[in-house]
Image (cartoon, rainbow, N blue to C red; front, side, top):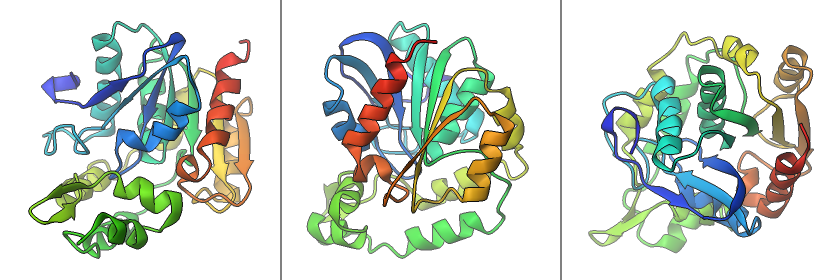
Length: 258
């Protein structure tokens, strides 16, 4: 179903009105959005595992952000959808931003959840890979995984992305593939992509997330018509911590006249 023939695992809620596509973050899975979907009954929401993750093809050849964005278009085509609002968290927001910049005729709105353009960070990928390498593989139990991955709704959300096999609980991604995702385009100009976005944008930040005040301010300076909301007390996984609030923000965005 994806671009260049890559297999993607998708979920369509059915429902009416404008279509919304939900995009998870790095090493994530479409099920992260289940609580948000449940809080938006009657609306048509499509979520899919991005290439290399979850139920989608695990080791695709092309891991560029353009390929991820092309998958969004391929999913819209597969479901017969002309235009959609994209909601993306973290890396999913990066994918959504590129899709909006590269395919403006297919994207009617953009909701970035703890996501946005940033300057290249040569050591950032190494830190993420080192964290992934610290995971005990496999986890002995799902409960142990949830505790290790942060506990509470965040740990539960991450643990939901694991699969049980061979007597343990395993990630549904390969660390070397994640490393390639993080390093495939070291010189990519994300701020230029941000400036090419033409649709309405809502940026949702966790007060304790990874988007610094300076970075958020620069995003709004570059695109002053961007709406922005900071969620008190929330971290990077605000969609897991506060799914009802995120759903309400998405609903307001979808229903706002433009």
